[in-house]
Length: 603
Ligand code: AGP
Image (cartoon, rainbow, N blue to C red):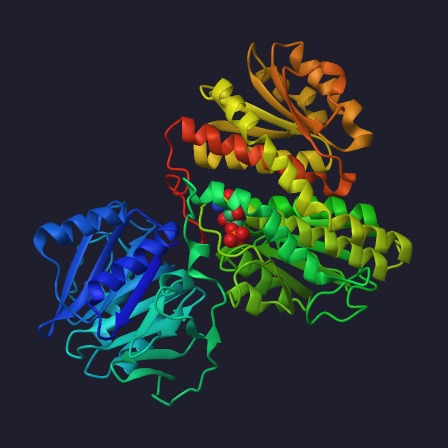
C-alpha cells in the first residue's frame, strides 16, 4: 500500500533512498518524502505526486548531505494526496515513515489533542509519530513499546529520534518489512527490490521485535532491549527481474514472461508422472470434505478457475470467496475442510485476515504465494510458491497464470489422493500440463491481432465479457484487467444469465467479448452470442482455432488446442493483451493505474 525505505552507511543516503523508493513506487505513488540526519538535525523533504516531483524539489532546493535516513512513497489512505499528508511525519523529536493503517487513530489523536498536541495533517501516521513522541523520555525502546501498546491496526514503521543521530529503529505488525545487510551498510525496506542493487542478504522481522540500525550494523531486540538472534535470508532474484528489460511497460514484459513463469512453477513439481509439492507429504489431501478458496481480485479469479478444476477432477465441493467478505461472514467450516489462500504479494490484508480466521478455527490451510517469506506464506500450514519472479505492474498477469497452473496441479493431486482419478489419468494429466508453456507462447502470437482489436474498441464506454463455466471465470479476469488499467467500465457475466436482466444494456454497437473454450458449453455460448447480436452487439469471440461458433462473431481470437481444463491459461492471454493495448491507446499509466497500488496491505 505504501513503500518505506531506510539506509545507514557510507553512501550519500539521499541517492540510496530515492533509488529504493523508485523500486517501490508500484506500492503507491500519491506522494513521496525523505527524512535524513544532517548536521545533527533531522531534515525532512516531501512532495505531493510522483517520486519525480520529490527529485525535482531536491534538485532545485539542494539535497541534504547525509549518510542516514528514511523515505516513503504513499498510497493515500487517510487524507488526500498533499504535501502536508505526505510522509515522513514528525513530532518534536520523533520522525517516522509508515506502511499500514492505524484503526484507532481518531481516539489516539483526540487523546493527544486533549494534552495539547497539535496536528498539521489528516493522516493516521502523524498520530503515530506524535504518540511515540509523547512517550519518548530518552528511552526509544520504551517509547516505541508504549505507543504500540495503544495502537490497533497494521504498521511497518521506520523511526528516527532527532537526539539519537545516525540510528534507525524499525518495527512491524501485519505490514511487510525487511531489514537488509550490505557491506558496511544497512537498510530497511517494504520489499526486496528496493535493496537488490546493494545486497541480497536480508532478515525478516517479526511482531514485537525491534531492528536497530547503526553504523556498527543491525541489532534485533525485544522491547526490553534483549538481543534476538535472527537467521539471514538470501534473495534469489536477479536485479534485471525487477527492471523492464527493454519492454515499454512492466505489464507487457510480465505478459511475455508467462511461459517461463509457468514452466518454472510446474516442471520442478512433475516427477515420474506425479505432482510433488515441497513439504507436503503424499496423502495430505485425502479425505477432504470441502475446500474453501479465498483471495482478492485477480487471485480470487484464479480461485474461481481452481473451483471448476477441482470439482471436475476431484468431485469435492469448493466454494470461492472474496477475502473481505469471507473474513466477516462468520464462515461455516466442516471437520475435514481445507482452506486454499491465494495471493501474489502474500501481504494483502483481507487475505491475511481470512487465513488467520481459518487457522483460529482449526482449519488446515495452504497458501499459494509468489513472494517468498511473505506474511501469508509464513502464516499458513503449507505454502506452494509460484515461481513467477517479481511482478511489478499493478495489473497482475504472470502471477495469475502461475496461480492457475498451481490450481490445476492441486486439482489433479487432490483427485488422485481421493481416488477420483486413476494412475493413468494422473500420469496423462502430468504430461499434458507440461505442454502449457509452449501453448501459452503460441497464444502470445495474438499480440498484433489484440493491438488491432484495441484500436477498434478504444473509444468504447462500456464492454461486456461473457462466458460459461471456466470461461466465465476467465471473463471475470479479462474484465478486471480492462477496467483497472484503461478505466473503461466493463462487466463480466455468466453468458446464460444475460437474459435475466443485463441484456437490456445491449445497444447497437455494444462490444461483447465472448469466451468459448469449454467444449460442452460452446454451443450454448454461441446461442448467447446470437441473442446479443440480435440486439446490435459487436461480438469479439475467443475460441479454439476452427471452433468459431459458426461464424457468428464480428471478430475472432483463435487459441491453440489444449484440454478444456487448461484453456483458461490460453484464453486469458489475449484478454491481457487487449486490456494492455486499450490502456496504451488511451494514454493511461499502464504500470501505475490511478488510485491503485500493487499490494493492498490495508483493509
Ligand atoms: C490485479 O490486477 C489487481 N492488481 C488486484 O486485484 C490484485 O490481484 C489483488 O489486490 C490481490 O493481490 P494479491 O494477489 O497480492 O493478494
